[in-house]
Every structure is written in structure tokens, then in C-alpha cells.
Image (cartoon, rainbow, N blue to C red; front, side, top):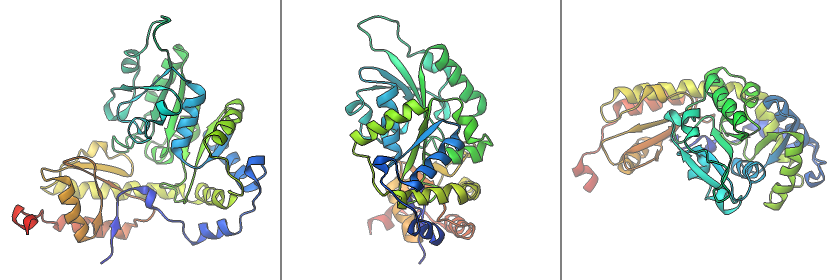
Length: 348
């Protein structure tokens, strides 16, 4: 039985052409900034995001951490959505390593607004910590792949400038957000000081992210990357996959969204699932069920669908490069005919 793994878009695997690009990659020592393939990737990334410079890094989490370390600083506060990735999935590195206090901010769909941000500004009193930074996530993982609209990005940017705050975008899935909203990545980048994007999710590379910002910021980021153990040598073999992904795989993200909406449509029809179709914007979807999520996940796996429990009654599915249109039709068929196990069958 073929298994359809919808746990995450991190499950993508490099195809033959990407592997070929990795095999023939020209390499050098990146600690000396002499790896030509890494340099090419960084130049591509800075042009795409509209930033002056870029740095290849092992992970998006490291990119977020570096930005917080440099632009927020120890003893200061960063305003971030209450369900942000840096709040929930980066092992408190914001505080433990960067020395920054994350402040959880409310926001519908994972979107920060001047109204909510303004509630957390502090007066200039010597015994109170200072807010120095805003961190936004686009698309927003835990909120179901939701995206910032152009006016929402501008509102955050204007608020930040008015209050002398830096803005960092966790753009792990920024290309998904761009495909969904039609906003070019360069335009999104114009509203923030720094941005990370991931190569190893929907774009299909096996490793790596890129951190983009000003030349001065990236020069310092290179130092902090080394301090965190992220200095790499002949990593052009890995960067070549990123170059290939940027040249060939961005356009494929639109199909992931089509597939996600097809699956969401079927989930919206069946009685055992409840899904908010308005929140299915990209390739991530969450749905709730009256059943225990872990039991339902187990039952779906027996039918060929691997997904993940996101709470006691919540389940997440993510479409990606490894799920074709034909796979999606089969997934929809399985969901449509799926019967929720009875209590008796679960106990036998």
C-alpha cells in the first residue's frame, strides 16, 4: 500500500536533477568566503529579497536567532505572535542564547497589528526593559499557513519606524506566501530589516536556509553564525541544491496550494472533521474532530495517510513537492470513504 506522508513539507527529497547539481557543484572554503556555489546562492537570495547581502545558514531557527541576537540584544524585548515559531518550536533559544525576552502578542490569523503591538510598548523608565524588535512569521505555521496582506505588512512597518523598532520576518515559507498573495518576495522584504527563508521545506532542498539583510548586518551575522557553530567549509555541495530550488521549484508551490485546498474541500464535506476553509491559504491545513486526534491519526495511517496530531482534537496536514496531483486525488478518495473507528473497534 502506498503511503502519503502529509506530516510536513520538510519531508521533501531532492530529485535526480537536484542531486546532479549537488554532485557537480564547484566548492571552496566558506569560512574564507571562497565557496563559489554558496556565494552564488547568497547573491541570488539578496536579489530575490531586495536586500544588500545574504548568508547561507544550516537552519531557519539559526537565522531567526542570529537576527534576534544582533538587532534586539540581551535584556531587551521582542514582540511576536503568541503562536509564533520562535515562541513554541525553537527551544527558548530567544532567551537562552540571545538573552531576549519574547512577548506574546494576540493577532487574528497570526497577523500582528499596530493596535495589539501598541499594548506592549513600555515607557522610558530605567527599571523597565525596552522593546527593541518585532518578529513576524509569513506564512504562519501554527495558524495554518496564513499570510500577511500588503496593507498588514505596511502597517507593521510603519508602526516599527514610528517607534524606532527593528523588524525581522521569519519567512521560512515566504515563497508559499508570495504564491498565495501575489506579493513579490522583494516587496515583502521592503517592509522588514531582515528576513530568513527556508530551502528545505517546500522548495525541496535537503538542508539550509538563507538570512538576508544589510551588508553591515550580514557581516556581523557571519561572526554570530561562527559563534553558534554554523561555520561551514565546502558546503557548496549543499548550497547547489538551494540554487537549483530557487531556479526551478518556486513555481511548483502553486500546485501544493491547489492540492491543499482539494483536501480541505473533502474534509469540509465529511462529518468527522471540521475545518475553516477561510484559513486554508497556502499548503498547511488544520482541522478539528470530536474524536481523539491521536486515535484518528493512527486510523488514517492504516488507510495510507500519515499526518500529525496538533492537539487533543486537532490534526495537521501539509502538502508538498512529494505529493502529486494524482496522489491528492487518492488522498481525497481515502478521506471521503474513511469511517471513524468505533469505541469497540479501538478497544479490540
